[in-house]
Length: 343
Image (cartoon, rainbow, N blue to C red):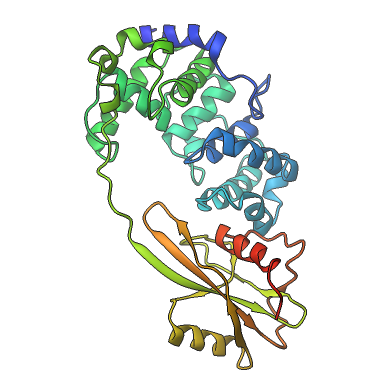
C-alpha cells in the first residue's frame, strides 16, 4: 500500500463523509450507482435533494425500468446533462431483461451499460462491493495532479494516461471502498479547486505541488474561451383556459426528451411565421423580460413571447400541477406567468 493510500485511510476514519443519503451498511448498489451518475458534473449539495426525490419515485431497479421516460426526466429536471437520466432508464431496462433485475457486479458487464465509463464503473464496484478498482473523477484528477505535479490539461490524452497510471498505483488491494470514498472526499473538502486547505491535508507532506508551493498552478488550467452569445424567442402559446402549449424535444441535443415551449430565432419574421404555422388565429399579447441562461459552451438570451392561441387543444397543458420534465428556462417562464395577466 502506498503512503498516499495509508495516509488517506487514516484521515478518512475521522474526517470522511459517512452520512450521505446514498451511503448505507450494507451498501445499496442501486443507490451508489444513482448517486455516481448524479454526481457527474454536479456537486454533492445539489445532488442530495434530487437523489432523495428520485429514490422516493423509483425506489429500486424494477420501479425505474417500468417507469415512463417522461416521469424519469421530470424527476431529473434541473440537474442538467439529461442524457444521464435517459441512460439510467435504458440501463435499468437492460438490467431487468438481461440480468433478471439484479445489478451486475462484474466490471465488464457494468461497462456495457449506457452512460457508464471506467471511472464510474470503478466507483460503483469499489463503494458498493469493495472491489479493488481505480477511479478518476474530477476530484481524484485534481488530487493526483497536485500530488505528482502532473503538467498539462485533462483534455490531453497524455495527461489522462498519466493520471490513470497514478490512480492504479495508489489503489489498495484492501479497504478499497474506504480509500475510494476518502480520495473523493479529500478532493471535495480539502484539496479544492481554489484555496486548498493544505494545512489540513493528510498527504501534503509528500505532495510535490505543496512542497514547491505551487498548489495553485496545478492542475493546469484550461485556457478560458469567451462564451459566444446566442438568442432565441420562446413562444408561450396560451388558449382561452390559460393552458400552455408544450412540445417534446428530440432525445439528442439540448434538453433532450424534455417538454419545452416552442423556440425560434429572435426576429419578427421568424416569430410571426412560427405563430401562424402553429395557429393562424394566434396573436402576440406581450413579451416578458428577457433573461440569460448559461450552458457550458455558450450563453443563451431567452425572450419569452406570450401568444393568445384561441381554440388550442392538442398539446396544451394546465400550468398548475404540471408534472412533465421541463428545461429550466421553460420552468422560469411558466412561473413568471403567475405574475402577469393571462390573455
